[in-house]
Length: 89
Length: 452
Image (cartoon, rainbow over all chains, first blue to last red; front, side):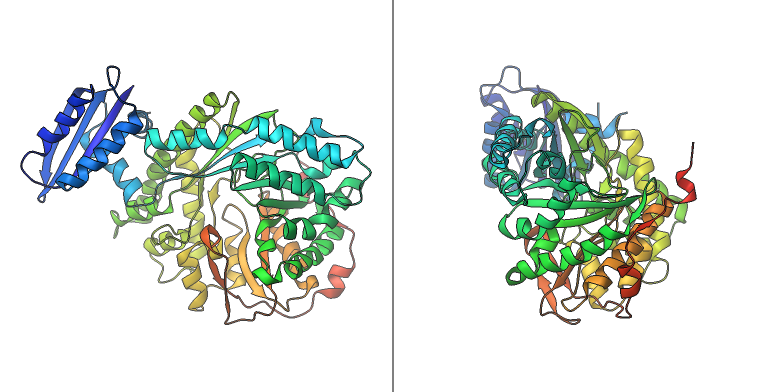
């Protein structure tokens, strides 16, 4: 299963490192990363593969929420199907 | 692969603009639940619903968690109970309504629809018993919804049923007077009823439907409103185009949820209902879309034209996004469930007569409108007849869900709570239609029914 992780919030040092660390610690393999800063706001989209993950999507979401609160950003993890459905014919 | 912009757009729709899948509704046939003994019928109904829909709520919650899009309601629609109950010799179908209520609560859905009768042209024995049972059934159950079809383009309008439904609405209001006539919020009277509608209170599982089916209703007025903010100052073609593109995206999410839910529940995917269903939440209003298009207030001159454009563009955009489209499909205008509609009534801009005009071009009809408690049964019947005539002549579904709140008058308001919202009491024309309604009989099917 492929997931899309979106990270949105105020820019700070180390957000990418901490989020990729969370994914690595749980066996989630990063396939693609897009990141930019718009008007001082940090936007990152990570496409990742859950095939080797040691946790379920639900557990990953819970851990991501906790991390997000610690570093002041909003982290969402969703199945990639919703994006594929909405943006491709 | 999608771009970062597309991902963030989807996320914004969900987090800021209230994008949700409004309902996953499982249709279940109860045609095999007949029996001469009503207690056996009730038990069969309970057993069948709790078996077929056992995993419905869990499946909805799983999909919500995986896809990250809220799925607000999980609901059930069943074969019209008039047909199921007809086999038994009971004189009231209230025990069957209680079986529906108990089964729905056991599987955890928030509404069950189908305490219904289809009397477009006339009554059978079961239809008569069911309609007589409606007030007590709605007063003694919590989540059962009822609907009665009183006409269609093919059959004309059953004016005997129209007359009786005015009385039934009044009686339902009386029996639930202590809760501001909440029973009437669960009762819809249809012309051109729809057998695969996933939305309450009018959902039932039509006789042409399969054993079980998953129908999904999408929503997203807030998303459309937000998209239109980007085309301010542009011509009306740009407005239609923006609504179409947005409806496409919204519907794709519904299609994904419907297909996946049907697969996991081992049943058939029926249809997507392409609807803009508002909620009382700020930013989730159809009225605000009309105002974004350029009206000072919903209900003013231009409202019918703007709503016609919106309704049509939603269908055009949604149609391309789903393999099967059905249900009611269009923009809903339930007054108490839409913050912009509530405001428009309160400031005197939106009247019952303008709402009637709007129903000529929107997806359903006079919906969730609180009226004075002293409105007579004949007047309610006449409003039902007017609305049915619009549906019959224009070959579209129309419906009436009026709430005559006992003891309340124009200037008062009523609070239903939750998604049902709150409503200011709206003025009703008090000139009498009594002689017209007392005639009874049947309005013949219109010339446009003869299409063969």
